[in-house]
Figure 1 (cartoon, chains in turn red, green):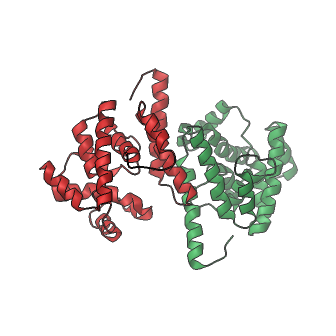
Figure 2: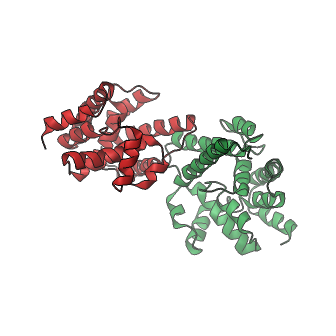
Figure 3: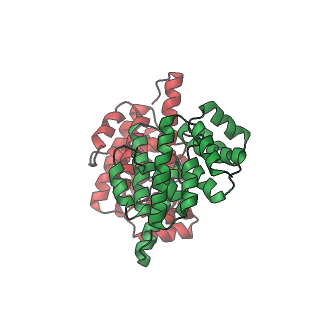
Length: 197
Length: 197
């Protein structure tokens, strides 16, 4: 896998604005990996690729879900969630990216999932707080991210859920399950008195 | 089933304050049944019994879940949810209430569920807006309840979810699934142009 070729291929999938966002996520993910003891190269790779399919026409994304056996339940939910699974499929099929940890971090960067890995958390949080982001509550999340990865991510999911409620839209149950898992982690850590990430 | 005996038995399960709430839910459920074409006797019966086990010591509620094959996943979630299933079991076991529609409305009055029946919706909403209730947003829900059962219930679930986020507590995924189902109903109704409930 030639990283420079992958970078250029990724850039070609999206308009300039999305590419600037991608670079922001890469740099934020590197910082979070350093801060919380994650694998920096994997974090940067997953961050680079996280929105690979985001700017694809939605029909092409739906077609990829149907044609390549991606989770069919995605089709019932907000289209915002499709690109994550489609992107993980595409970078594997088109560029041979086969690190399952990296692919999972791409797959679950929007929804989260039940037992999030450190890499999942880093990419998901970096996507919330990269320098270009501006939404209600983002500064609170950035502040939490200075010392607590899970608390910051719960605050990120809370912002997403509040936004969806405000708009009268469906909430992806997996996001609530991911959030519950993080709350359990935080509670367990308090009990055992471990400092944690 | 002697309704007067059932009333007195229910009253004996709870302190006065909870009984006053129960009477509020009965009267609100009757109003909603009339407004939205539900079965008034079933609505009043389910409302009367909805908090049957609410004031039981939590150990007794947990024991009932374990001893009588109620959904074990309840034990992993907020204890606030237990009394609904325990109450449905108790009124059947102790008083022979065997109308499954009524039992389901008791069982799901706190969480909601995927495909809520008209009776489920009436009891759940009545519990949110009975005259004694006072929480942020309750008046908005009361206003919606004047003409749209599903919109009012979505607003009720939104208030619950916002409260749990505020407190940093877990959100029961079934509530999100119930809310998604109501949003789909509202969308389908708009599409078909039907006035609906």
